[in-house]
Amino acid sequence: RLIGTYGRLTPKEIEENEKELLTPLKPEETVATLIRRYKKVKMTASWNGAHRIADRRLTNSFIAHLEELPKFNKAMGDWHDLPEAQQTWAKAQAHFKEASQNLQRHARQTADA
Image (spheres, rainbow, N blue to C red):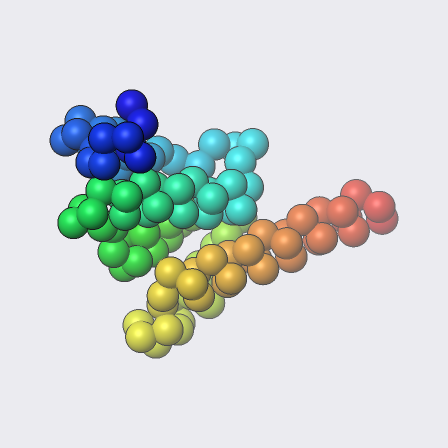
């Protein structure tokens, strides 16, 4: 269904869109992939006018998924040490992109050694 043509999502479409926030990160997916998915969910919800997804909800869901991945334990500890006012969606994206890049760099250096 074309949102631009009809203007509003149906309740089922809203539910399907929000389910994307509950879909865990697949092993082959990167943090950047998860961020893109969440941005798409938020954008789709905003097309529906009154139905919006708060940044706090995105942040909480994002963190919940990454907490399941042991490779992010250190970054998660650093995240939880931040004052709550700094634990924003924008900060979460930047923080965990950097953590992911550091992990990738470390993996390359270890492989090269």
